Structure formats: C-alpha cells, structure tokens
Image 1 (cartoon, helix red, strand yellow):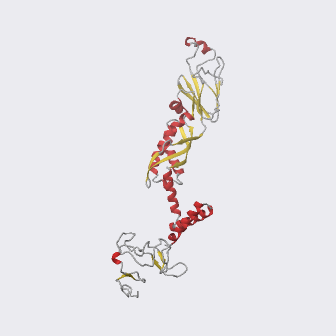
Image 2 (image 1 turned 60 degrees about the vertical axis):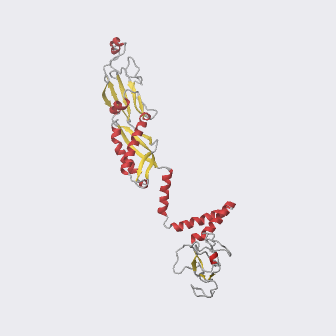
Image 3 (image 1 turned 90 degrees about the vertical axis):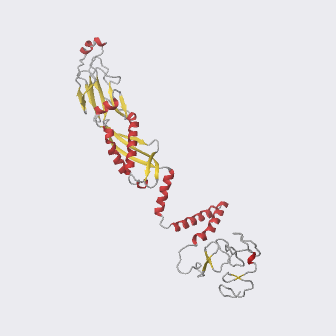
Amino acid sequence: MGVDNVFLLEALEWFDESGKELLHRLPEQGSGEIKFGAQLTVRESQAAVLFYKGKACDAYGPGRHTLKTGNIPILTKLLSAPWGMISPLRAEIFFINLKVFTDLKWGTRDPVAFRDAELGLVRLRAHGVFNIRVAQPVLLINSLAGTMGRYTTEQVEDYLRQVIVSRFNDYLGEHLKSLFDLPGRFDDIAEGLQQRLAQDFARFGLVLDGLYVTSITPPEEVQQAIDDRSRMSVIKDMDKFVRMKAAMAMEKAAASGTEAGAGLGLGLGMMMPAMFANLPSSGTPQAAGTGEAMVRCSDCGMMIPASARFCPFCGHQQLLNQQCDNCGKNLMPGAKFCPRCGHSTEERALEIVCPHCHTANLPKAVFCNQCGEKM
C-alpha cells in the first residue's frame, strides 16, 4: 500500500476484495506519518477523507491527489526524536466505498402481533431484502466506524434489520386493515416503509437505496381461513359443489380397487339419494322420470314415492298395521310398548287402522271416521 515508507513518499490506494466493506483505513495498524507530497488514488466507486491531527481535513473524489501534511521526509524523522522517533503529526486516510450494497436481508425473528379487522389478533412473520449506500462519508465515520480500521455491512446489518422491523410493525398497524387486503399491496408497503426509514438511515450517513417485501405470512390456521374464504368466493353454488365432490369421491373410491375404497364407495352411494333428494322442482312433487306422486315420510320427512312400502332413506314402513298414539312410530304386531317413546299400546289393541289414510278407528268400525273409505 506504500504506507510503511520511512523516508520515501507514500502512494495510497485501496481495493475491496470482499465486496462488503463500507470503509477502510490506511494505515491499517492505526495513524501514521503520511508525508507531504504523498499520492492518493481514488476510484470512481470510492471517496477518501484525510484525518490530520485528529480532525477531518479534506475529502477527495475520484482521481489522483497530492496530500499536504506537516511531515517532511527525513526532516520529520529527525525532529521526532523527543517522541521516540514517532512524529506527533499523525495522519490517516479513510477510503469510503460508495457502491450500492445489495441483497441485505431483513425479517422478523419472532412473530409480530397485528390486529386484523376481520380475523382479530394474529401474529405475522415478514421477510425481505434491502440495499444501502454511503451518502455522507464523514458522518459515517464519526457516527458508526469511529477509529475502526474497517467497517463492513455485516457489522451494521443486524442493527438496520431491527430498525426496519420496528418501523414495519408501526406502518402495518397504521395502513393495513386486514390480511385479506395484502395481495397486490407488497409494493405499496415497501415504498411507504422505505420513505419512513429514510431519516433513520440518514442519521448515519446512509441511504436506503431500495427495500423489498418478499413475504408476509400469518400462522397456518390463519392461512387456512384465508384459503377457505378464497374458495368460497369462487364457488357460487355450494349445493352443487358438495354433490360434485361426493361424486368425485365415489369415483376415486371405486377406482382404487381396495376393500377400504369399496366400503367408502358403498357408504357414499347410500348417501347420494339423500343429497339429491332436495333438488328444486316445480309443481307437485313427482318421482324423477316416472311422473309418480310423492309423499313425505312420516319418520324422516324426506319425499318418497307414494307407492313405496318402506322409506329408502330411513327404512320406515309406510303401510301401517299399527302406529304409536304418542309419537307415530310403526309398531310390530303384538307390541305392548313403542320402541321409540315407550308409550303403552295395550289400550289400542282392539282399534282398527284405516288402510287408506292410516287413521285409528274404534273396534269393529266398518267405515273410516277420517276418509270415509270402507275398511
């Protein structure tokens, strides 16, 4: 680097091989006896600041510059004998890297609380990247680096990450009402957050050159709720959708060829009549494709053909010989108590049930008291 010359002039320059250094000091071991007439070379992506006698004296842009200090070759070394042959006219050069440092990561280590207008209090995780560059070299040296020989993005990244997360929490609470509004708003959030962070970075001589939000993720249960809501907005007829899913499940079960699949298909097959029984119809309820009149099962309430002897949904017998007075349940011949409600049937043992309207009549009645038909 040309900074260890005792009697000759120095030639000062610096190359950042790591790509992460914000600044670098020459001499690296501390201040030195940079002499009058030393040559300083600054690249286009750099700036340099000369500190002489402990103060920032001058800043240099790209090009070759001649430095002016009180250290004269050979003469200064002789005059510094009282100080142990070390000149008290100390000087050092700080090289500042002015390039844009990209792909710095930011994100929430722990979930942050967010009060959603629709979902209530949820915890979010957010991640992204940001870019920085040095805008004020002297301010960077005085506020961050101090007398350090080198200062890298790794040393400042953790602090800047915490600042971004803190501002992100405030910005999200002020400008976002619900997580359902997130899609399509990442750019707006990033732009607003970048403007809010400008002052925080400027106090260290830095500029936030770009900030990007790559993800904002709620917990799994909240993600499931968002997905369910999206599906509901797509499905216009939930009844048809349920029937379609049931039919698809039956098809998959039959195609599997396993005993479990066969059992599942059988069970769904038994459920299908009930699922399709309530399809909308016009006029008098009729059996599909036959024009036969439909009646309502007295036990389960489903619409069934009037000629059916048993309800295909619950198995309830439609041709009655004897019925419970209390709940209407069909009774087996000779039953003394109702199997549903426990009501005694002995007092009706001699009653006659009309085969037409199923109304109980007095013993030995010839015509039904309800419909007038002959029994």
